[in-house]
Amino acid sequence: MTATCVILDIGGVLEITPETGCVQRWEERLGLPLGTVDERLRDVWQAGSVGSISEREVHEQVVARLGLDAPQVEGFMADLWAEYLGTPNEELIAYVQGLRGTCRLGVLSNSFVGARERETALYRFDELVEQIVYSHEIGVEKPDPRAFEAACASLEVRPENCLFVDDLAVNVEAAQAAGMQAHLFEDNARTITRIAAHLSAGPRIAVPIML
Image (cartoon, rainbow, N blue to C red; front, side, top):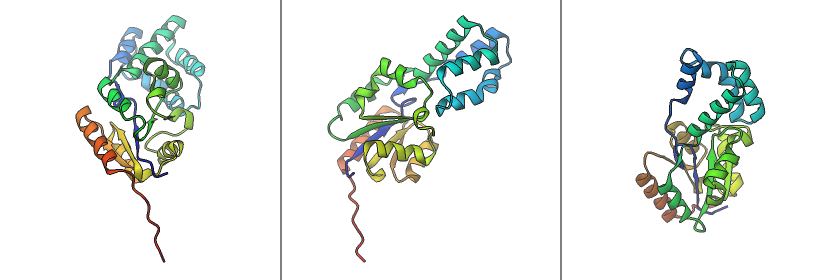
C-alpha cells in the first residue's frame, strides 16, 4: 500500500486524439443539420461510456435513430472509432515503458464499450501498465470519486502515493479532491518532468497519531 504509483489517462495523453470532423461529414452526407447526431444519440453515447448498453445495441440504436443501412452504420462506427483511437503518443509510451518495475503503473480512462479490445489490439496498453480501469467496465466516469477509488484499489495503492495524469482540468481537480497527486497533461516534456519528480520523492508513509 505504500508503493509509488503513476496512473494515466488514455485519450489525449497516451493517445493523440484530435477531432477529425467525421461526425460533421456524416451529417452533411446524410443531409442532416449540424449537431443532429449528438442530439439523437447523446443518451446512447452516455450509456456506452458506463457499459449499460452493448456494442450490438449501440449499432441498433444508430440504425434506428439515423436511418442508416448496414454498410452505412459500419462505415459510421469505423470513422468514430478511428477518431476515438487516434494515434499513439510514442514518446510518452516509451517513457512509461522504461518505468516498468520501478513503480506501480495503471490507466484510468473514460471509455466506451469495445474500447479495451480495440486498444489492446492496436496499442497493447495491457502490457504497458499493470491495471486498466475503464469507465464502461466499472459503471462510473471521471470525475466521479468512485472512478479514482477503483483505480487505486485495482493497484492496491494509497491515493496520496499516486500521481494521476489527465488532459482535462476537471479530472485533475477531482483526482486531487480524492487525495491523489495530479498533473494536467499539456505536453510530453512537462509531463515526464512531473512524473520523474513524483518518483524521486518516493511514497508517502502514513504516520499514526499517538493519543
